[in-house]
Length: 486
Image (cartoon, rainbow, N blue to C red; front, side, top):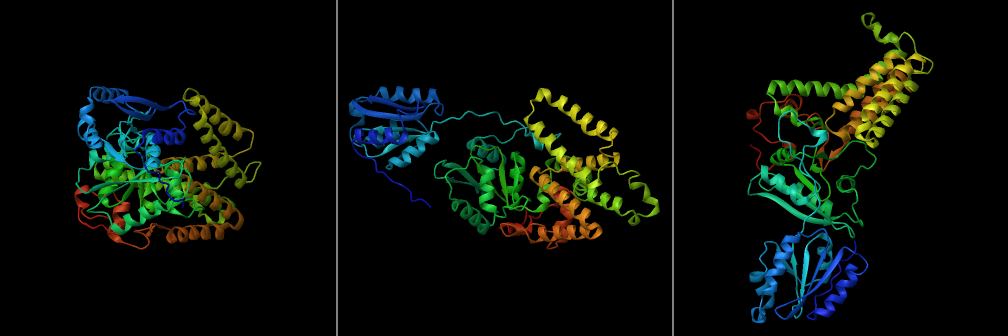
């Protein structure tokens, strides 16, 4: 890892200005501003990024400094400035010019004073930001309508609003030699496992790269490993209430500046099948919704290959279910029809992402006519193929975790190909290999299929059934919480 640079601040204002002008590229970048000012008969310089500073606050500070007399800065100039004459909350000093450069590029304003061997950093920054509106992919009928945004401080504030525990920790880190991406590791100290927190922080500190342009996704790939495994090792959420719920359980959240998605660690397979809507209804209704969701997810993985197996081996079906098999197979082999529609759905999904909202309805009509009705009429597909693939697609869209739905789609295609090649053996062995793969996976040392493998009856009951909140008086055991009781 690259050794940290350090350039000490000089007493001479000219020497400091010469270094900062070159390091910040004042004359090369129009948005890097250097203001040469003189207050109390002492030369000073302000460095800031245009667009990152609250103009009204900076104007107020300059007005306060402009009213100073020479005698008011005599003696300990630095102490007088930061304790008396700069009326702002977030003020600090540094004797490292390289840190000054990094801080200015991150947003704070630097005040360099002649005759003072430290630079004053005034964190009066602001970022262009959208409102904290409800996330599109985690909507609820009843509940809060705010969501995380791309600004780190806003996200930590939304979390603290829901957790007023005095041991809630927001530990700041920076990653990226060039990007200097701000990261916050959030956890409740009285609940979270210290070893888990230490392991996650060490994983983040070992990241050695020049930048994190994809923010939280880049972080996940660095800290989770298993790069070619399609299943997500962490969970993402854009809802502050969801993040707060997991913090209360003992999870650790990673908040990345520039991303509205917060990383929840560690997670199991079942975390990706939960949704806030289940807990916004009565327990019995929530349990029903969870049952329907699980049914949809299992159907999205196993139903399509199973129907294909019955289609190519009709002797496996009892007479009472003989209607399930197709009467006609169409002009193309069934497996080719399935793969074509799978690819067509993915093309449609990508097209929907890139299509303006005003044209989305038209795109849906074209897809329905072209892929559905016309394809059946010309004999390209049969009705059963479209029916069962539609059921699988609904199950995919019913999966709360977008990453999990994509992984399940790949597994479904793999099972379909294995079944077409080896028939019953391919289907059974494919499911067995999937279970073995999931059972061997671990997220920061936590078994991915817990509490199914290893089995824990009480925890597995809570996974399958949405229990009433008053009865959930124990935190998940796999997190090793310091305080196991709620």
